[in-house]
Image (tube, rainbow, N blue to C red; front, side, top):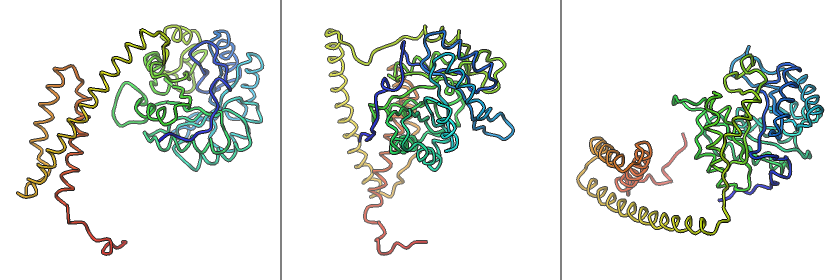
Length: 374
């Protein structure tokens, strides 16, 4: 089911300039000189469509730098006057919205921590009613697509039609090279539900490491995301926040120049014909895969009935271990990744357990009239 969002095209509210669309600036506005000097260097690149800077910084622990506060808005105003770059700021309260609008900020964004709290998002949405300003919504800290969608809907319901999502990755207990796991499938799901919604990738927060930014930025563009938000500081080595993930304006230009831009569609008839032929082959194989899975589940049901008749437990760990070992070894020989194979097997195993559980418990449901509330 598609999301019913009333939004305007990205090009109607931000000048894209040279591709890709690029929003850049320091993680935090630290001093007036730092912000304005960085803005001038970014403007000179000719690549940046908007200047971003953190004015209010939600920090995990008290005592950490929580942003320079409202005075930073005056610095942003000066940077805009001197460079003509539109400005973008994160807001987390109605007061933030009010102050940012009063200072002439051009674009607002809702941060990951705010997106996770519907009360906070609604407060921001209420403060935006009757205002015509672009708003971008970052994904929530934890991998919850519904929260992300809900935040976008609340802002849209407030009358904001210049709307975009920011993919900044998700918190995960699993240790990896990234600060936040990209979990591309969630961003793809959002794109599928709302094809008209622009999605901008934030490789700075995904990686937490400037050396990995090019890899994530390239993948985001390959996923047909509409642009990038990259943190850039005149001297990252002395940045007050997130120093490791910021790049100099010069490094930013080099990074962008080395990205490969690909189109979602091509007009070459020969190329389209070949793609159509290959996709037809995939469609036929997909149909066969689904047919074979259905046949597998029919056998699973027979096994479930046999287990029920002979009082055999549903779960047999040794059998599952055997399947996992044999199938992953076979898949590896066919050049399929172990991670993919394990996920696929786990999905089928889970469905098999569900089907057998239904068979085992058939006729044992508790009548509704006997259910009581604790």
